Image (cartoon, rainbow, N blue to C red; front, side, top):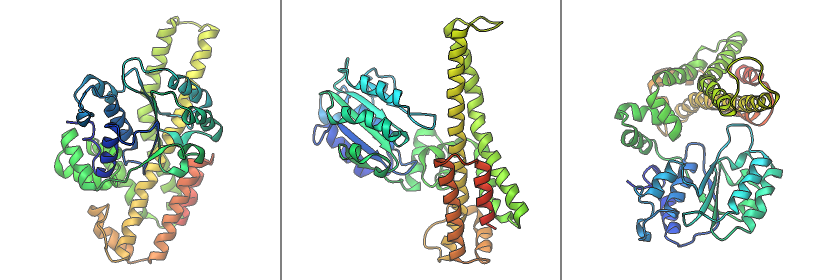
Length: 380
């Protein structure tokens, strides 16, 4: 086993990073780009492990077995920082803390490495805080930024980074990874990989959670019942409910555990009124949790709309002559019947309506239900 094993379907990227880890073409700043699910952060993590691998033989760096590789893959290495946000954006204070960390020499490894998994979630003012540190890095520091595309990062930043472009792996490669890494049955892995459209993280969730598979199938079948404005409104409410419940199910227990842990750390009394200093910190935690919940719902809605989009994608493929494999193979009969009652132009317009709703939800403060209701009325 090596650190590269999880990068299924990315032979060119693995070759590029292996070469750099051996000292050929290594630079101080890297930009990992690729669509959601392509494995940007996994590639950055594997590269970080290879750079700091304990093996003296450069051709074996990234062994996946030494202490450095294992602690970096487990995100516990003192010289490798992983930065991700569960809120809407990375704040400017967080960026300043990164710059401060990057200025320190590594304590035990060859390199101090900063992996920013959500570089696209920084405002321009925040990104500018990083600019000088990336322009004039300390000698033993390597920056790794991850974003969906180069356009999601300021040109002043990306012009100073070496590009690593990932693609979505073929479904067969994702299924093979699920079988090998997670012990999923072959048939379930293949279905999950296809339904997730090669998004590794979503495929893993679908493969391991039967209820998630049922929720997805319910979402994909919604267009089959659209018979007027009333049905569209009901569909919109149901879509928002599915996304909200899925997001909240993972947040509620975590929020409560975080609050208990904070109160214990602060030595809060078991009953009675909290002292003002403790109340302020609890309020800060609750505010952070609200921002995280908002992003969780937004991300969940986006995934739900991506599932809905796969229905119309399959309809379009049927209308265009079945040139490629369907995502929702199990619904082929219903998809073919649906495709007979409209043309490709109508299907494209419906797909455009879904994509517009996704953009509005993820980039504006529009109420999700209003955006989904507007979208649903365009699908009738």
